Length: 461
Image (cartoon, rainbow, N blue to C red; front, side, top):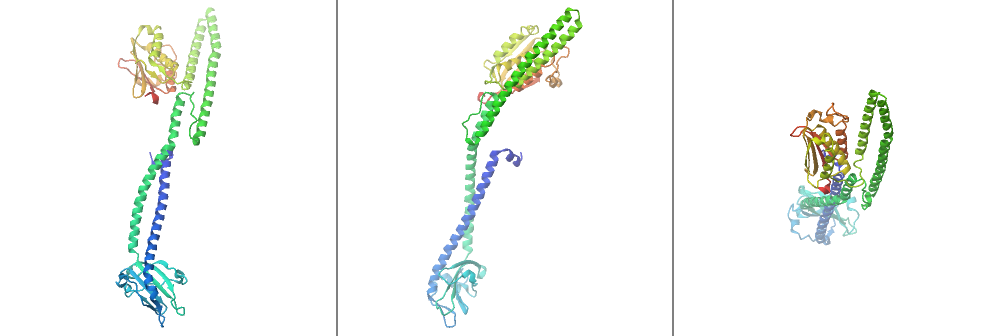
């Protein structure tokens, strides 16, 4: 599955991705802020250091008669005496300038009036390209030792390369720390999202119980954010239950409503036969038989459509129902000539109502008795959390190519025999309606094998 398709179908994935991106953006902004604050801090510390060195020079500065600056005292730091040492000072007037020996034959560019501002007690910090191809951090200030003469522009500068290296190390360490913090916060977000979505898993489990037992309803002790969803699902379940009840009543009304017309037709057939109209009576009887079979089939399909909607949890004792069905089939002409081989463990239960299972097994065992020669094999097992029932006979069977035809409405395994070919299709409908699956096969002894499978509920496995 493509990542975009996964995110489109997964709330969990979208929430985690959104949290990861939001945390990454927040940490990126925080990291940039930290680097800026650290840079500002180290620049201020360097400026304070330069100001401390400037205090050794300022008391001895004055302007001579020619308007040039004169320094009677010099800063004591030895780096001011080594050429290109990275630590410099300079005092300038319009008539000339003096500077530290570390500048050698170079000089510092004068700041603009806008940058320097008016004469005062504060130093002004700036970055500038300096001599010897070094970038500099420079503090500058105007002083006026003699009000009658021009002011002196005093500048102290230091090489910014060590500070840049220190700033790069801080960026790297901060980035590593923030990456680790990002991982921790994303893991915390994953845990929080899983806890936040846990109520939906509980809703899913309750919906599964509702599917198995329509009388159930979703509980109302859920977080208030999903309370409207719970109410809507419960209202839908109530409406469905009402619709099914109306469908049951209509099916019963249909069955009762057709009994009288069919009985009247049967009376007409008897009257015609009594009057000697045998052919007409036979035609009426065939019509009645077709109508009765069709009616029973459609009523069975109506029952299969509502087989999932029982009002109580459905569990059927397989062995008990098989014994009951076999005892009835054994009394028929075809069943009385057969041996029934039953291999079903005691206590095996299938996840459907006893009435539905009896109807399914009745149709299948009766069909097997019609075509078997000597034996009918019935077995039941639990395989991989699935209840599996098999009904087989030793008759002639059918070709595997005709399996799908046999499960269609009106599909006939034997065109010469009686019936209307609806037993297997009705059984398949009922099995599917109760959450199972029906398939046909060929047992080792020949004939036809019908396999029924129902997955067990989560708590029954």
